[in-house]
Length: 179
Ligand code: ITT
Image (cartoon, rainbow, N blue to C red; front, top):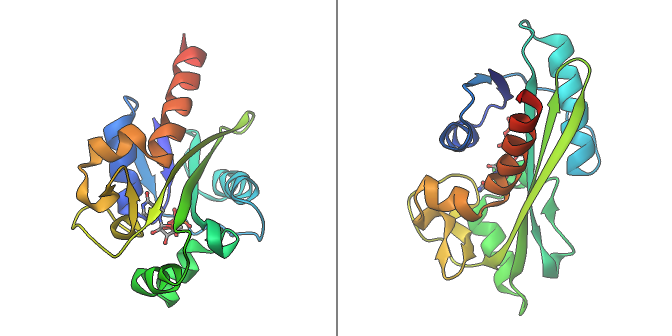
């Protein structure tokens, strides 16, 4: 069993579709240090393991949307920017740029008290006017191959997404380890 550390139901839903292992959501608000996604996730996994009851391994997911023309903004600040500006405003800002390319990145950090490991996934796409009702967060303004993530089913999104790719690496590693 994996303890997936997040307050975001959308992330849990995607992880459950993807992993064979059972996934328990741990809604622990770990300290988000300033830095790169990998450092944030690693720090969060160690802190959660130390501070929450239960002894199963923990998995932290830190994700960011990096808009090329905005030098990677909002990147590691994506959650803050979604809460304060909202995705419509991010679209309005990106709309002023000729280059609308963006990358979603996820870093998963696993920690079981001994082993610490990270798994990264990314996907390239374009920022577009909001479309679609599914998914969560920035999904309505992120398009890949002509469709936004909010216009895809969870399975379709997982097959190509930043999180899906990171989860795939994690699942392979776990399967090899459990052999
Ligand atoms: P936790 O930290 O509790 O996991 P969070 O939603 O704050 O939840 P992040 O900091 O990793 O998680 O997320 C950064 C932002 O990116 C946040 O606004 C999310 O809603 C958004 N986000 C994360 N994954 C996403 C995805 O697959 N599609 C669209 N938006 C996503």
